[in-house]
Image (cartoon, one colour):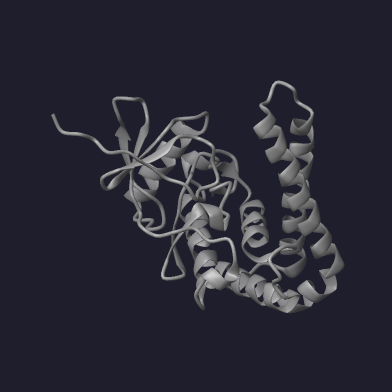
Length: 242
């Protein structure tokens, strides 16, 4: 009998079981799994290169996805020149490929829903694919871009100079395409506020585990600190985007 070796994977922004088996990834299914599988199958059909391929469901009821080698990042020192523009183009290609498709329903397009650097595979410092598609859904492209711009470019922690953050923000926006400075900055703040408000509900929810409530506290602190950074430097960031 062949022994199947399962290697736990970390790095993505999810709490589900995710393991590597050979050149595939097996991921426990959640509420977003069915939509995600349909989206990935469609994206493969149109040649979208920046997502894993959905290969079916295994005997344990887990999604089978292609394994994409590389790593996630959490600091700009881990990213190569051109990474932000490349990431912006990847997101724009997703939105363009799904605009008007039945999966987008009445919305603008299909959004990834969580396109942070923790859900992006990098190779040699450049992004190659988005992973963890369970938050994908019909949505607004600016919401997706605002969240990406925040999580890739705005950091109240990590000792990243604000002028460097502004350059990264401009590069990502230019890679994505023509979006007005006010639109992007408003979308960033909306995303930060949405996370803070949603997690505020979870902090005192005794039906959640203590670990999940601590995660909520950390998420609130992260979102509010980064939002204060944006407010403090709003004029400078807007100028950098013009």
